[in-house]
Image (cartoon, rainbow over all chains, first blue to last red; front, side):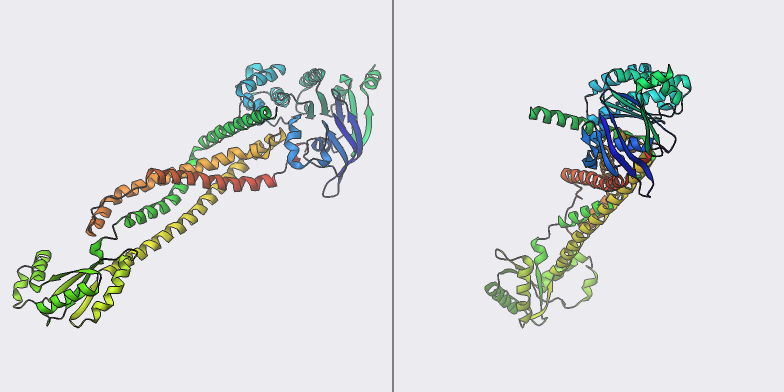
Length: 229
Length: 319
């Protein structure tokens, strides 16, 4: 579903953010991406979203080789990816409903269908009663769940999350990861960038570790579970 | 199969347009004061060319081809009597394509007394000082304009021995026609200049709108909105600005016209026309509204296009 083949990303200033990275995510897999700040996690996500182009190597997402996909196709690639941000990136002058409905409006769905799917998505994250609320009136955890509802409402095959628990307390974080696992069990490929090692370990899923732009480790979920036991 | 896909795509397109349409209206209404100021500026800018256009149009509607404007007044020497006057009348009738009316000094005096109101004062003249006068009215043949006909007749008249002085009322008419042409040119020039102003004003307003909503644009593109989806609400906003500006311009213009109507009609009546000031017709109003909308659309397009080209999304993930 996501493949990196010997990917190097060098920024204009000359700084190397990613160095010869290779890995492969099968459809339906759930993987954590971890490493210290500046290890290259964000750059890796940016490459998948076509916010940056790899300097060398190939990034293949959902069957499209992004190295030879023109930039004007970026919106189409992004529509196949549900993206969750640390700071939610909600539009504060729109209601929860309108925020979640955004990807569907972009797709040009009928209003009746939009209503149905937005309600289903909000139900999934446990916010069905909050459709008419404004984002600022919600707690941090609720805002993050609105962000997740927006990411899943278009039923994309891939879900990316960038430090989704960054601003949440441990209990909410655990709930959130549980929600990701639930989505993954429905067949969505999930890639979560996080440095919450304890929580990652408790999930028993595959972990990719970056260090200084290089691939430091790629641990299978079974091994992780074994190590814990 | 393809047709079904096409239909589905076009319906999705239509629904996106509808969404943009309402979202742009919502934005304008949510910034009432800013919208009002922009629209007022646009309205004042557009009222000027509209006003000049209607003025020129009204002057044009005066019946400039009326025969009375083409009359040549031929004054004979005071020594010329009835015989000479009649002889010249006959020669004009034979030589020129024109009709002639002779006015004797007595008739002239009577007309003058009536028209000027100097009845008593004129009694001081022992002799009638007026000469014989011939009124020559050219009858231009097909294809020849009145002014050309007058121009061809005038020199011949001046050469005649009995003639003291030839007066052509026509000259001021030519000057008016010249002024009207100048007016037309000015309308075109002003229209171009002020259209440019509308484009620039809307472009600047939309530029501020766009940078005020930079975050929203970034979020939209991250969840997969294409440039056209991002652009559309702003284009519609531009259209609304332009169209509302036109509406204000029309209102302003009509307000001015309301005040100017009476003095204008009095002035024009003095030129012998019973006259009702003409306003823009329905087609004119429609054209003004649509032109305003279109110019606003163009201004918004210029602005948004520039912004979309320089938009950077890289900073959205990670710090």
